[in-house]
Length: 148
Image 1 (cartoon, rainbow, N blue to C red):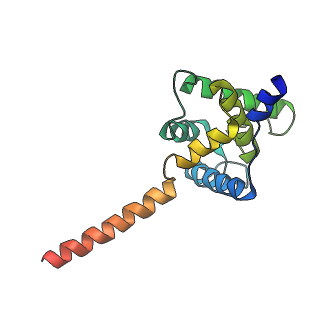
Image 2: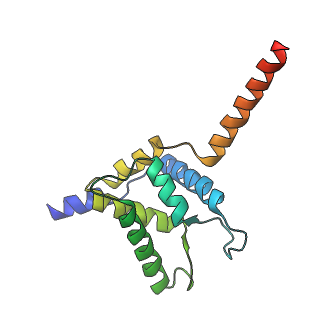
């Protein structure tokens, strides 16, 4: 029975789902990317991750923002101890994000795949919000100029 429960906590993503999740990760990570970062690829900070998960409605009575902070720091510590991340790293890469998703699923007592679906249904990315805003401004400008 325990093996069945533990297996349900693991991610079983299709190639398309993995690409979609990586794309979302990159959009949110790029939004948070600091120019002074020594990493070549944009990485996800805790503050942006917290906002993203809040918009996805991940937080509830079983899993709060404080628990996300603890899990984020725990993963940073584990990856640093195992020399995956260099000392002083304050953000996570995509692999760390996948581990975090599995950790959140354990705390919420749901399947990791279900958590990924919550993320897919969640908020629009910062890039998508900007595109929608620009499209709205273009439509508004057209309506305004037609009324004059």
